Image (cartoon, rainbow, N blue to C red):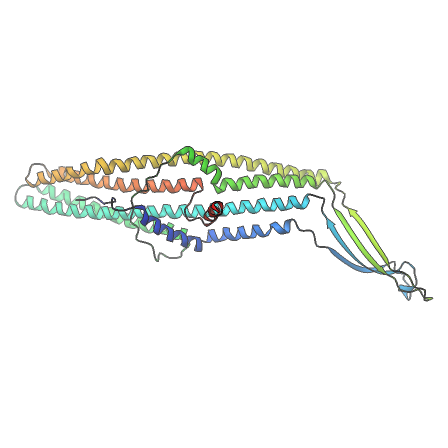
Length: 424
């Protein structure tokens, strides 16, 4: 009658399996792959944003009279070729580049947030599956113990030392354990489905044999975690980039009050006159500007839109900060509470409950206590064992949530790359 032993286990097994699963998800999960391609597309928009418009090449005839021999009848008739280029007002190109850069930055942070969210889903499903399998193991072990108790009760009944009620109680508890195993058998496929979806698979092939490991006991400082989240959470960084982008868009809209320049250079070739007199070719150069006269209907609404989007991003940023603070408070409290429960179950409650079962079994063999006392003692141990593995799983799940909230998800290739560059 030994409970599920976790003392000989450590977190290395979890880390190894999770590392393999995370690597698979990064390569196969369609949400991650889609976010990656969106990120790649956003980066490609930066250079074109600041590029000049294509120059315009024109060719034609100027001042062509409607008569025979048109090219040498009128002195102003010429064949013309020209090249024109629009030059934005100084500062507009830089602002367009800044807008595209901030947009690409926000998309990159969104990509990081997607990766972190998928990694959290993998870890949650991993520990849920570990809990389900540990519960099955404990239930099967408890059923085996109850079957031993049933044999003892049957022997007592045969010797006239106990009643048939004891045998029926043992059989009822064994049936209850069988019913629990059936329920758990229905839950496992649902949990596996969550893990499969996060991995980007189509089937259940290769699901690892997960064994719930010893919890990684690390200190949790809520203030430190909050500061880390404010500086590291990709979602907050994305909103900051959006705020910066809308500010640049506002500046760009205001710049549109200033005209752009259209520079045009042309060359005109003139044929000789009818009398054979030659005519020199001609060169033309013009500069044109657009007149932003429709400010009230075109430019002012753009500025108002940019300001409204900036305020929206600021409010969303503050709302997300508040959500992070509340979630951290909830998850750190859950982690600390589960950690205390783990220690209490392992150091006090379970050892005492096991001693109670051993004492009750010894007393029942000599007919000093009734069978119900023994049965209740064993079921109490079973409930405590289930509570222990549940607390371990919940602690690990709370840690996964905390890592997600703070933007510290293991296996994130972007974060690992940035950390390596920072160390360099």
